[in-house]
Amino acid sequence: ICGVWTDDDDLAEDVADISKKTGDKSWQMSLAKEYTEQLKSKIADITNLGDRGGITAALFLTEFVDKKKPYAHIDIAGPVWDDKSGATGFGTKLVSKWVCRQGE
Image 1 (cartoon, helix red, strand yellow):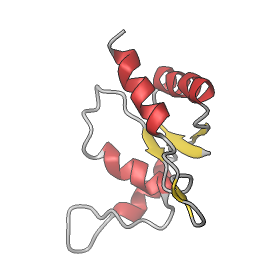
Image 2 (cartoon, one colour):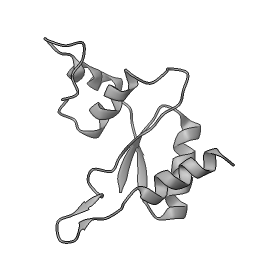
Image 3 (spheres, one colour):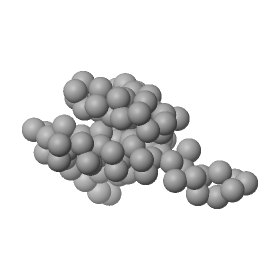
């Protein structure tokens, strides 16, 4: 199961629907703004090294995405790899189906 961080309810519902249809399981996570503090840097404008994993990665992306555009951070780092068999391909169906749906 991958985590999905977004502030946009419509996008979250769309990703959840596609997740159910493709079998690439996902779960919407809270985009808690209080973790933004972890992105502060003494030597740069911002750092991408927060210690909360997926949520700080999602918050990092908010600094670069147009505020008028909905976006989601889909954290596939865990399910994309299996120590016994290698790459799983997890997320490929989820993302490709979402992209195709945008053209419908």
